[in-house]
Image (tube, rainbow, N blue to C red; front, side):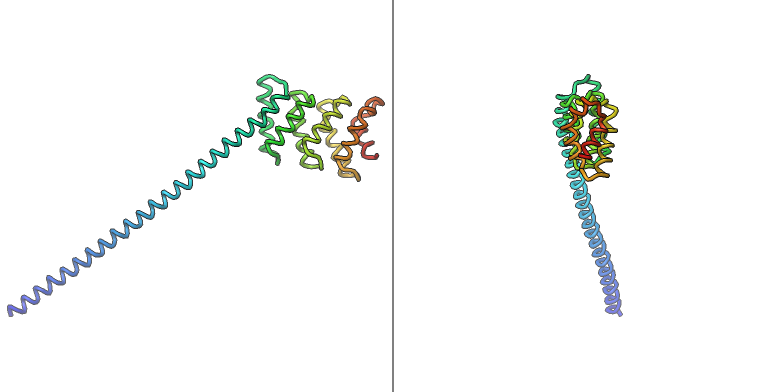
Length: 214
């Protein structure tokens, strides 16, 4: 009887020990699993932060480069366009606004405005003149710079008012769309005959029509 009690007691002790060991193992496994999850989460957070930081730095770098490029491009405009500080700042704002609303680079816009200044376009008219030339560059076989050079030369010869440049450009596009000649061909011939046409009193539209017909 005494041996049986001892065996029962030992069995109870062994069972308790096994149960305790199982619980301890489970607790240990849970702790290790939690640590591994936390470690992976920390790695994920670090990777995310590193990626975001790299993207932010890249964005800052691109923004700084774009600002430096624009300063270099607009420096040419400052050299050719005479105006007060306020006028130049307003012109810069207008030109940068064009880059946001038109499918044209800052570089081309600045180059066209620079050409306008070189060709004697009045400071207050440079922005509108540039916009018209950029639109011609987008819708015809002329580049904006080619259009600016030729139209400014014809305007100087014919005495075209700044407010009539849009009408001149619209006539050019209409003739190019409806005739056999391209806008570049029409404008090239118009530039060559503008002096004689001005002497006999022809209008700008008349010069373009004659150039198209010829």
